[in-house]
Image (tube, rainbow, N blue to C red; front, side, top):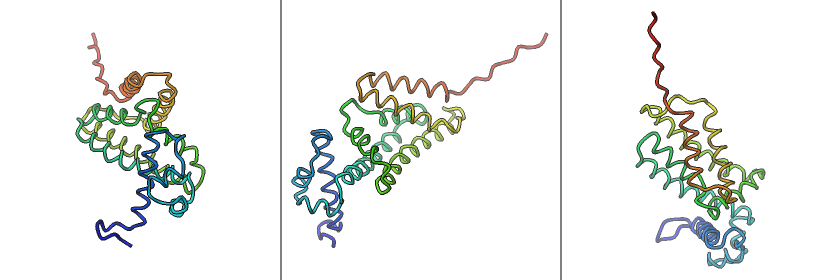
Length: 206
């Protein structure tokens, strides 16, 4: 059934209220503050009604991540499109990927959700969000190569770059490194691998 005001199915509206409430709680209180009763209260629903749509709290967390990632992806792509192809776009991507600080609610949610990736029904949407990030990275690299900003890269570059950022992300969350330093370290590694090489001129023979 759709509402007359929006044309959006009531079930979709109800689910959206739950996801929005869960994300608001995570931003305000962190993951430890997420309680089913509080989600239900903010959604103006009963706990039973919330579970009717999602089944478990784990499912709520994973779907909240997917829901929030979709919003972040639209914002990220808009910011990338406004930057110069090549190094500027790559820096935007790296800045968007890494945690803002040790309290970053989106990364906290990602870590918590990723621990549930082996559950089949939860793992599929999690992998889809990771693939969306990789697709954006590949688009940046391809465009940068087209305009001559980047040299041809090894096929393993993207997976190694993501692994590098994931490792540094953990250190940011643990407060063992400064975020600004990490951005520069990641950019430095990218330059080592992607900077076009100037052909070395041969000395004339005598």
